[in-house]
Amino acid sequence: MLTRRTLLLSAATVPLATPALAQTLSGQDKADIARVEAYLDGLKSMKARFTQVAQNGAISEGTAWLERPGRMRFQYNPPSPFTLIAAHGSLIFNDSSLQQTSNISLSRTPLGILLADKVDLNGAVTVTSVQRFPGQLQITLVRTASPGDGSLTLIFAEPPMTLRQWTVVDAQRRETHVTLYNAQTGGSFDPILFEQITVPASKEG
Image (cartoon, rainbow, N blue to C red):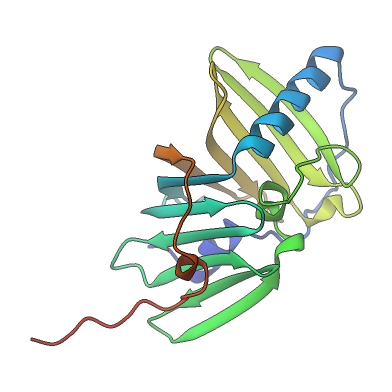
């Protein structure tokens, strides 16, 4: 079963037991990082289905909307009562079953890296790993000033480069995986998607 803690860990992490250390980047690594920056900067909007898998194997699904800079919505399928919205510099979590809402600063979450106005994977963000597999590129990131805040691994299919998955690791080394599919890029969305945190109750017949 998807829990409130599991859901929050998909977007924000608590300090890692051991801060991640940057590897020595090769020329190929730096070229790939530059390609990732260019790709993410060009990704202005996207709608996709997603599957989320927690460390305990719990699986949930839903629809995600991304509109850079700074806006994203994760709507989980029923019977899950959860919604995540990134907007106005905050990540907002809602549990409609408990009628509870909580907020954290978007700048403290891995999603803040993806939703930045200008994606810069140098300076404020440190790339700790670049891995290549047939048809796939993976890069792992931490925030340079606070590497203990957590790590984010972005997984791209290529060619052409396409964001397919990300993985967040928490303090106990538990991993949460989010996989995107049926993605549609471009266009614009109704602003209410990023403002309406609760799901309207169904009408009684």
